[in-house]
Image (tube, rainbow, N blue to C red; front, side):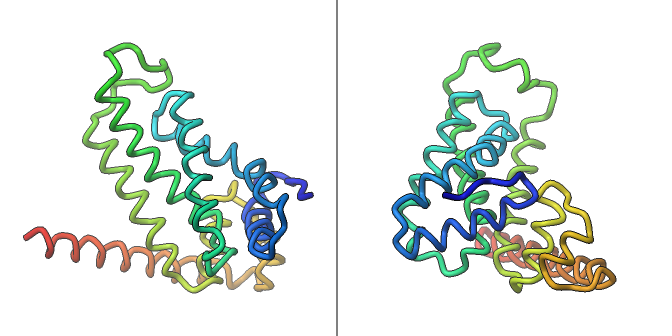
Length: 196
């Protein structure tokens, strides 16, 4: 049974558990759920969902994962893949909540002072970034996930994890970010061309 050792190792825990599941370990899905539940729940809450809908994000994401995990080619991208699924589900549920909830019925934490258009654009941008991350070479993808989505790990632990000199982390990060920016811009140009 996997013991989750904190947010810093979540990427590794997820990839290990996915490999176990793909190898036929019956307990792997339960371990995966236990490890990623807080992460997926936080995605739902970050999208300003109610606590109930954030729980639905977790359940629906894991239902999709159960269906598609046997065919996932890169278990090391498992956390990023689950995060994209959760964000899509959170956006879908957010739209439903906004259509059905009476004004003032949401949690106080959801605020209401932000411009809904800006919130929607921020969510779309987040989805674009996660899609772009999936297209990066494995080493750059892992590095960016460690730096920006895995609790802000320090360079020393990242260097050990990726077997990379500390001095290479900054330049590799810059190359990865440039590639993400290029991919996101290409995706947006492609969507613009289809809509024109």
